[in-house]
Amino acid sequence: MKLTATNKKLEEIGKKYTRLELVSGKNKPTALLIGANAISVLQFSAANIKKMDERKFRTTLRSIVLAAKTHKIKRLALGISPGDFPSLKEYGERWFWQTVAENFLLAEYSFTKYKSNNENTNVREILLSGVEDKSAKKALLKGETVAKAMNLTRDIANTPALDMTPSILATLTKKTFSNSRVKVEVLGEDKLRKLNAGLILAVGQGTTEESKLIVMTYNGGKKNTRPLVLIGKGITYDTGGLNVKPTGAMHDMHMDMSGGAAVLGAMKAISDLKLEKNVIGIIPAAENAVSDSSMRAGDIVTSMSGKTVEILHTDAEGRLVLADALTYSGKFKPHTIIDVATLTGASLVALGQHASAIMTKNNDLEAKLRTLGEKTGDLVWPLPLWNEYKQYLKSARADISNIATNFSRFGGTIEGGVFLSHFVPKGVKWAHIDMAPRMDSVASDKLAKGATGEPVRLLVKIAEEI
Image (cartoon, helix red, strand yellow):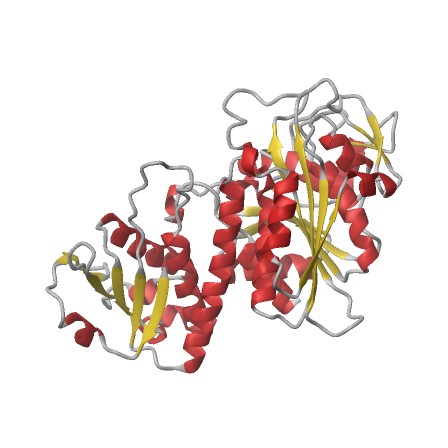
């Protein structure tokens, strides 16, 4: 979809076409939708706009695009300006225009690659009338850049596991950054053995698909400045292993690499925006399969850090690959590490499907993540990461177990975060984002069914501001 800023007024655009008023009235935007495949002119009414918050603003923007798609409108013109929304003034004009661009492109997205009879209802162009300010156009372009990276993330996460193995993901990563400032290194199983990455190798040992550690390096900041490290879980398909998932719990598990896809998308946006920062992206990629060579419940595996881990449950595999990735990240001497993963179903029980869970021992980082989550739309909410929870992971046979040794179903999300905390390099700020609640879109998101592309916006904003 093309997003065009024009200095023409709505009246000038609309005179060329016959108008049909479809949606109007008190407390609603006025929408003039004009004929299939023609142009539609929308203008917000003043009613109720004063009370609109940033969340409602995003979904309203998306609703406009969905309405246009429903009515097969190919070109759309919108009269809108920051001054129309006094309740959003605190966020500033650049935020306003970036948010407009992001949400138009996110709402227009659909994943139809595998549909044989695909009716194209996509909006071809949205014209934003009355936009003359250069800073507004720059913000629109930034919003487009971030949204395109999010839609790339959605494409990757939505792709079936047959077509998105660890090797294919590695190849795609190289292709994505072939003409950019991002350098990509892919560590295969031979190199992982030399690094003693026992946890990644254990997760992938039940399949012929080779596990990979994908490393993306972006040096946009000053030389020798410590980088931000982003780590994303890249389980390209999760059967649960020998602790196999029940019927109905496995069909979406091609999306268990959504954290890895988000890190790739964030690195794409960071590179395209030419941020003056040093950022490392790491994706530990593996497939958790069922076979006679799969890791077993009861196995004890040595991690890259040297700590031994008792595998009490083979479906708690995401934390295993992340643990080795966290250890590996120490070689970059980062100032901050953010890991992102569809780690636990328990996070949905705790928070529902409207926010990701975050865990960190750094109060400033927690506050930053919450504030930027509201600003970007990638909402997050904290859970405790207290030492009291460590006792439940003490193993009688190894240094640590990968789930609670009493098999308690309480505090499962915290348990995952506590496990990861054992592998964070010393002296480094770290936060864990359990994005399982935001893996799939929900109706109120006003997005296509499937991946949301979160938390790309949050990761990019963290890279900008931290």
